[in-house]
Image (cartoon, rainbow, N blue to C red; front, top):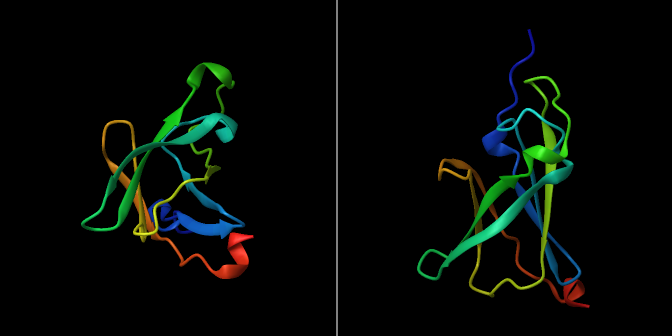
Length: 110
């Protein structure tokens, strides 16, 4: 029997030019994930953590089976330099995962 995916470890962040691309998966909603999105919640200067909440427009996609897992992609054009970690929460505040923010290299800033 295959091991279940550890969704807490699926989140990652990478610079694509000047945009921070945050992506991951969740099985929180049993639908196609084309309408899942991350919404900015807060920045914590003390810990260097940016928090996003996962949102989903249920009325936009047909119901799929309960095991559907899909990707979530978010691009952020403004990330303060002190941010070193991303935290993803559900709408009710449950932590879905965290990931490190790599340093912005000179190549990525063009």
